[in-house]
Length: 69
Image: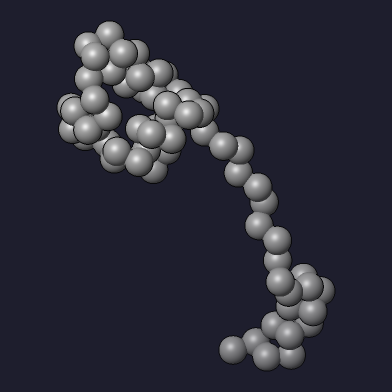
């Protein structure tokens, strides 16, 4: 599940304003500590990269035609 950038920024700002530890902040917002650590390093989510197929699409289509089970 991906959290919105607004939520991430809110969590970080509350942590800073209230002087909470990472553990306290994670518990308050019911998120993982590792997630919060990542957000502190980089609040914006990483862009996903398209998957690279191991099979050639044409070879796959040909195989499906030969064996249509």
